[in-house]
Length: 196
Image (tube, rainbow, N blue to C red):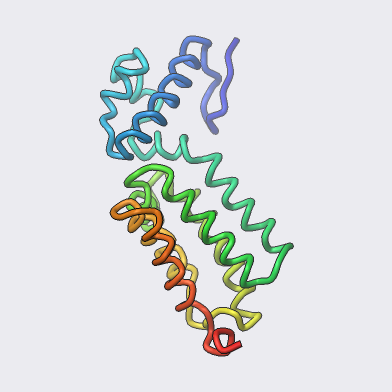
């Protein structure tokens, strides 16, 4: 039975589907162990397929990473939309920022890949990153309008902050990343909000 979940692609034969699923599973394992710079040849070997099969499904590392992260990034965007309807603007922004940092820390090296992808319109991750940035921007706009967050903070600042804290957690520890996040969030708050 043929199936497909890849936009714009024809349905896959059953054997191709099995290879595709094995490649994704082994890529997730390899990235969890070695970060996003893990050897793609090792991913193919683990999946029991030739390198050419891997590249037929995923022509670039970014394409493979985008497929692995797609559901998580869509969920992160959805969380942002849900938070627009709940809690205070400040609490919603903080909750989403924490969720986004946890997402960005999924694999070692992911933060750097996401920072690159947001600037590179040819990256397979670009559209998903823009969607995440848009979700954060709506929460940020709401928090700024409430006076809780400084008026000069931009969505790009927030995106860079998320990736920087996730990267710092990779280099040191999750506890150190949490401390840095606390300091950064304090810096985002407007002076009147901080005094209150």
